[in-house]
Length: 611
Image (cartoon, rainbow, N blue to C red; front, side, top):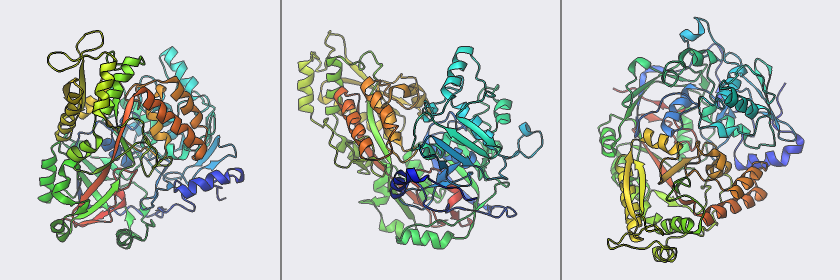
């Protein structure tokens, strides 16, 4: 029996989502290959990719960086994903048979799983084939709530699934998480059917289930390796199109992915737009059995110039052209003629992201809600020229934002104007008024006369160095001494999660294309997860909880506007910009197109064999 996608009572909401492009209106565009056919991966088709930071380990429940997430996407499969070609993005089934059935009150989701999907072989399975079942998704969701794991992704389901928070609270008391305990909201109808019971209406649950942390892991594997320090992160076992070649993995240097020989395969049948680029991709890819690429070799190169030279020397097939390198390949956002003549390809999109600046609200110097602390943060925000940073650090490859929700994401308001604007003269007057006096050296002190110094943290490397230089100029303009703090990416994330950084540029790329994913960045209970500024404002938190009960639309937008103003009044952060993502590909790459949500699109395109 064909599943119904939406109930009649929810039709207006469903229609809104369809028009927004968030869900597919008909059958999924990625067609499953016949069970008897293997995937089309050719071991002689080798893709050479590059990361600009080191990987952090392969466990979807705990990793939170974009680059590792790309690898996790190909290993651990979620129930849903996104159409490779559709614009705006569309949700489609992945391991699920179809999109979920949603009850009339939007509090019950029924999802059915495809049969015959298997994990890659592992000693944990005792030599037997291990089929993916809905129990694996229940276990994977529960893991996000295990206090010992301290997952940064708990927020995805926090307060949403009936009984799940109570199980986590019990574990905090007893010191042991009971994975065998039944949770009312995670109802297993049978081996292949899961029914989610929610505490309140949730219109993003399908999108949340498509997010990487909800990729299925096998309990046997986790339990076999979890007692060895770091072993779970080092031992990925999933059902996806690729698997890590552990014997070739050199930490922080090289990762090799091999096509999973047991992957069920898909027939490429996506429908793009009418642009020449989309038409070319469709003509080249339609009907191919995926994945085609048998081996993905990922090198870690921290230096921009090293990546650029490697691409020029044909040692890399695809790489991201970050801001500092843009002039080497682009003129006004377009590929330079000499590169186009060589057949180099450019896929360039405005990322559904926001880079914002935060000041740690738990910091004894910068945090707090007294008038003088708010004045200090407001002056810092007003001292910074965002347009200048875009020009110097990113060579113009970004667009300044006023609103926390970026373009391309449901809830964005292009007409919103922030009350905090660049004005260093007014910033200096504000500091004078609230007692931040300048000493003989030209730098200000705190109102009590103690020294004032701000520690600005950034990722080590050329981009981070440029960021610190631009911010030092801003702080100098208002007489505040700044100390540079450059850290390795993994160290930066760890310190940030623990509220140990004072201030930095924090980029956030959409986990799912809805405004909720951005407004949760400033929600108090998300401190230690995604709330990098460790801010907790009761008025904001109350409105955020209310917003989650509403579908996308004008009523929710009103709440989002109020929340944005609350953040501005308290000067807890400053909205910065959204970057363009420019990906360069060698002529041999076939059918590549940068997806706005998926990172690690390796199973969706092809490549010619190297000669």
